[in-house]
Image (tube, rainbow, N blue to C red; front, side, top):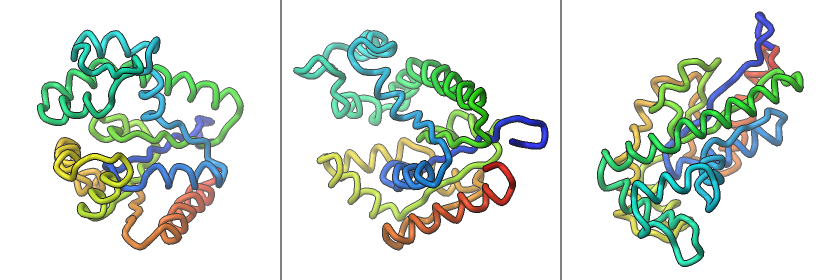
Length: 207
């Protein structure tokens, strides 16, 4: 706990293809509970979820795939081409995600957890990090990020570039960081750097 008895809340973010998901996985294995806001958003956007009807109402039936679920690539093709469309999506989803994250934070605090990590792509863009005890930003070279996402998602490089350009630059995010993890030297180095941050948090007495 912090000196005031409050559970310490840290943030984890990074642009698409940066490797923040792997960093979150390592931190969870090392003993820090990780709340994945992006995963929560995906669950809420599923058919029957609290965000589904609002998304379809805003963007139309064309974003619904043959399986009845949101076609994430079709949605991305809309929102990452126009800032106002991306803002509309965030208006639908952000409040719902924050409510669920806060609910989980409350549960973890009631369980006596001393520290927790909130992982989210838009942590800095929403200003959410300003209320946290520290921010971890994962960075990687632009071309490396493009290659990773093309391989992972099976999309074109131009689509990935549009997604990257629609996000806040990683340099601007890094200015807000307490810890920066550079993901440009392989998986083993990424994991080692992640553990170093866990150790730094533990040395503060919050684990």
